[in-house]
Image 1: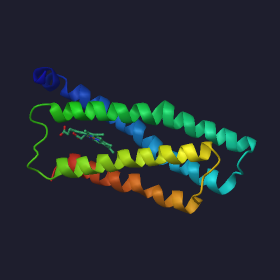
Image 2 (image 1 turned 180 degrees about the horizontal axis):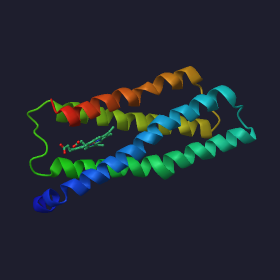
Image 3 (image 1 turned 90 degrees about the vertical axis):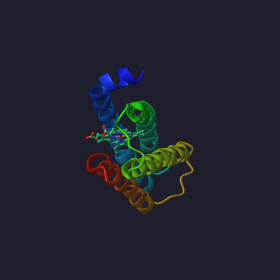
Image 4 (image 1 turned 135 degrees about the vertical axis):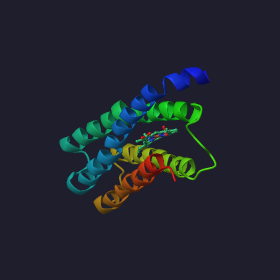
Length: 149
Ligand code: HEM
């Protein structure tokens, strides 16, 4: 198993980065949709229905599979011999940030359900602020894997 992981390291990392890009695209875009949904659209209208469809498809069609793929390929990299040295800081800062990113994904899924049921309570400003969360986490993650402090 570890021989196989060592041999396929570059390809697994390639698949990991592709999955990460797809996941991040959704994590940045879904809160933007929520900003417009909260500020501009009245519940029960045709446009409300259109936003609900866009939000559902983005979450279920792209973000959920991309998150699962990111985790699978990321954990395969963790299990690859010689890649992660747990005595360093970077694996821990990365682990904490990916847990934060996964929490943010779940938080967005909960807010999507609220919009779908016509019971959003949050303002556009709140969604604009939450939009900064994945940016901050991304900075820590990329610094962790590239600088490897
Ligand atoms: C979800 C759980 C995740 C796990 C378990 C995980 C784990 C890993 C591991 C072990 C590596 C290999 C590091 C190396 O080859 O030296 C890696 C590479 C990488 N990860 Fe993740 N990762 C996860 C999520 C993410 C996320 C959310 C991002 C971006 C926001 C990300 C960005 C990257 C990048 C850019 C690389 C390539 C770094 C390089 O070798 O140049 N990962 N990941």
